[in-house]
Length: 84
Image (cartoon, rainbow, N blue to C red; front, side):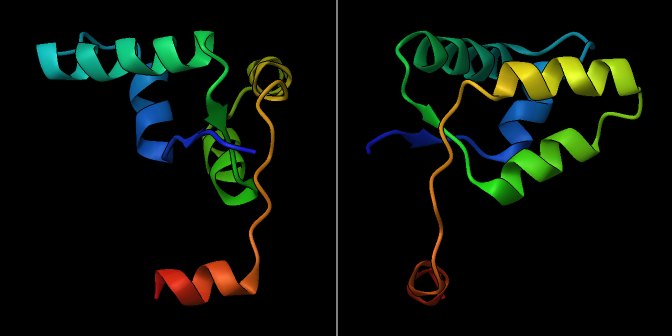
């Protein structure tokens, strides 16, 4: 399985309601493109971080459902060791 792992900070930027500067808009637009191209993958810790920032239950469920379309990339002990 190939794909692009999107970091929590990028998801948070995309979900922010405030006005974004040109660079932030470029990042959010690129995220939209890779979503349309079905390139996004998620790992459990990032999914958890994104969802844990949603205090409203209804919005949490809505976002959880929307994010369920992104496949989970399994992570193994060797992945952590390689990263270290």
